[in-house]
Image (cartoon, rainbow, N blue to C red; front, side, top):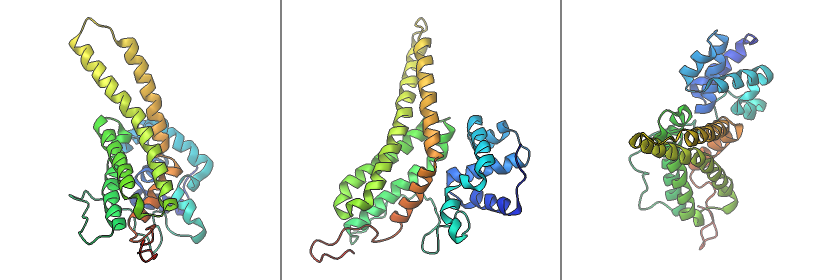
Length: 259
């Protein structure tokens, strides 16, 4: 039984739903729809989450209330509104740019920042479809974006202070691995089903059942990762890095001064 929302909780949930990161916005929608009397099935259909995820966040809400939102936890001491990142940090905004927008006079660090932002936005734009799991290409595109960011970091590595970018590179590697575990099974299942369709006399059902079970477990791990506070913190901090010129840039080797 969900405890009725206080006016403050209701306001906070609406603001997270309307202005928060995608994962936390859906989480807020789950609680709002639950408190409005909607069934788990209706909520799952509306948010693109599984029923098990809906039930999990219902239980977490009963236990932790607003504590299930990392943005609220990070801003609680200052009393800031959820979804806000402070006066000096822009709110998360996504675009589909035609090009990264690198200019001839950009420093190496700022050129790298633009390339990374270009693929970071694509990673997040494909995240809802990855969660839904109906089109395997959404997950593929999200994985490609993470791999291109990792390649960009290798290319532009000399432009940044190593300890500044190391956490971002580590997190991207972990995300790519979780996405890759699902993607590899998606590809294997797709090829096996095509082959079975062309060879009706062959019985691949034991193999398909095994791979589908493995894929289900891999998707559960992926959804847990995308719903985690760690992922939300990574998105927020990485965006801050990418949208702040000069942040983390290595000193100019001639002047010894950071740009």
